[in-house]
Amino acid sequence: MGFGVELEYPTGDWTGTTLGSNDIYTMLTNSVAGLQHSCRQGESKEHWSLKSDCSVGWEITSPILALDQSGIDQLDRFVKQFEVQITDFARLKSVSEAIFNHFRAGFHIHVGKEHFESSKHISNLVRFFIMHEKTILDLQPDHRKTSHYVHPMNRLIGYAKQRCSEVSVNDYDFTGDCNVNDDHYGAVNINGYHKTIEFRQGVGSVYADRILGWTKFIFLTVEMARANNFDLSWDFVQENNLDNLCAAIKEFSPTKFAPTTAFVEDLKHSSLDWIERYYQKDYPKRIARN
Image: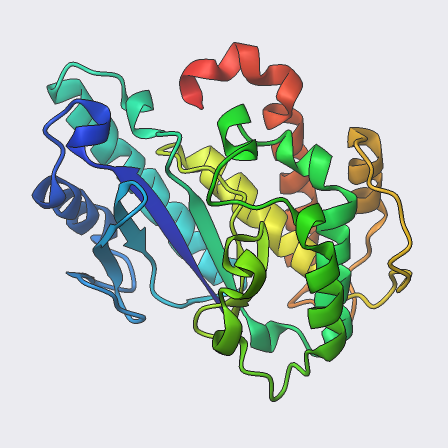
């Protein structure tokens, strides 16, 4: 079972700097030093890679990583090393590294569909994000809430209901209708490329703590969806309540599907800590870091 990430960063045209592909690739090379995988230019499932992105400039993609502690550790080492690289570049250019947290940049997480054993699990996941969407969006800067590249889940609820009822995880080809009803830009894109579920709400950032915290939160929602203990009714009310979201996390117990109990317990504690630090009420204090 695997996952991959896409990290978008702006070109010099968007930031008013001389940041170009050679600069980004040098940072990428330095950041993967000592990791399990090497890097290359162009799309690759086996390497950390750099390619152009039409929305903002550059996109760094990871190789397929294990959806367990070893995969988290690989991502942790990479993003921390990349933060150092881009901070050093900003210092040389006498600018703040915060300018690379551009409003057009996103951070996308792809989770392999093989992690979901039934369409019920996918239905659980979609309904969880629709139910708590308003609160989850408050974990992101305001500009991400209105991004052209992240469509609200509630506008896709009809399509999501239909898709979740039809999907047979074992034989359904997710790649066949990626752009139906703009679903490719849905906050949770159940028709992701390479037969994945894609999470698009994350904001592009050079800060490792933001990237890692959001990743662990997404992994936790995947484990919660696989627990098979949600009410299957689609007749629910959207909530905008931080306490309810945190209560749902605290009450969740690892199931037989979880990699290990310790792994999921770490996801729970890390997610609650990250939510506390990044919830909307704290943004005025952290505006330079978002």
